[in-house]
Image (cartoon, rainbow, N blue to C red; front, top):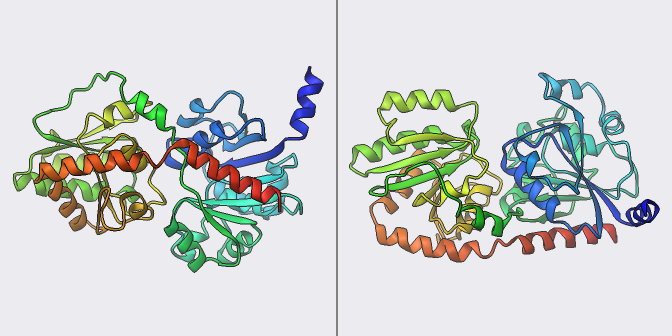
Length: 383
């Protein structure tokens, strides 16, 4: 029996996804969703995490080959890796031969896989953010020239939104074929999990607004706190509930207390199941300064939640060029203020965007996104 299984695996296309870790992030989450749902009869999947552990590891299916190099993240790891050329790093991390190698984030993993010089192996760089300048594009590489040289070695660049690809082609190179593939979400599981009971009580007399993200500078929660205070002072009663943890939390909690809104702006922490909490809210807000293609906004639409989002990459692809499915605001505190105010002051508009969110959420089915990825993988394998 073991010999039969080995022969079957031998003829399966071998694909490795490389990611720094599986901590609590959107890219980490959608990668786990993706590998869990790729056709296991067609592909032999390996998920390789440079550092072991992380919040999303427990959601990885047991039949996925999981590997890691280091048990824990250590200080200065990025600088240490820059001491070695990409080829040396590739040979250090990747011991077997694969048909396709995927760097699932920008930076160190892209540099490592660029070191593969095996002609038959196809290389994919999966980009999740706007690489809108040379400094951002060079993160994880020694410098801009090495970053450009590295990305030119790839066979395909995948972006999670049209904006992400546009920035890549404009600011890095247009000499590598590109494809837009939307994130994979466990749509049915999300809806099922949203029905589980909760032990938190929300005030149903006022509008509850939520956001789910790492609490970090790019998510714009500092702006959201100021907007919340301004709206409260103007008489627009509402609550804001933040689901997540991160390095900015203590600083932001201090600001919440300074403004005296600790009773209406709450940090609820990290939850294994955020969906049953999300649906108890009336509105989802994305206050980010930068996104690639917001996983949380996509999940909010799947749950039929009205959405207000700053104009970041993917926002108009999700919510419509003309606010058909949600409201896209200027990427500023003033924009967030106007977007929230419009729904807090008009309950009929809030009801309208709830209906539109339910409609839009149906278009992000797990089946469609996985099928698109498999078509891309097969096309590369057949080149």
